[in-house]
Length: 178
Image (cartoon, rainbow, N blue to C red; front, side):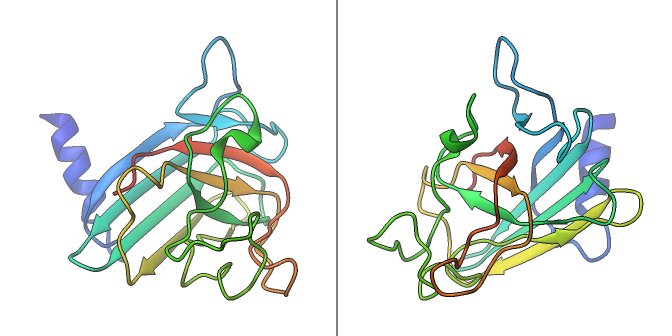
């Protein structure tokens, strides 16, 4: 019962669209198994730092809200939805999920690599290493094709030839986005 009350309370936080909490985890490095929230860079995303993710899906829209704490203070992270679940290696999470898929991968064409066609949850942490971002997409995920959220080294570029890039993959959260 307490878990239900905590979940209901988390969904009613002001400024957060109601939805289903998909992740409420602490990052850990890869060990004998791959955790749901894995850090690949313990300096960029320290073990024990926390991630919370909720998704709300409407008939034709999707909202994602991401909250983190315990990360590097005053740092900008590029954060995107990827196509595969997290794995032992950073690249295991596959490319960015795109509503309209760029035929050339990896995609750096701003016609495809942009916050309307991909999910960008870039945020800058405060002096305590906490931050929050919300994305609203005017489309729904294709079933089974959006399977993780990846935290990157720096904010996302919008320049031609670099659009959608945000540096190394520091951490990943496996989530079944719908």
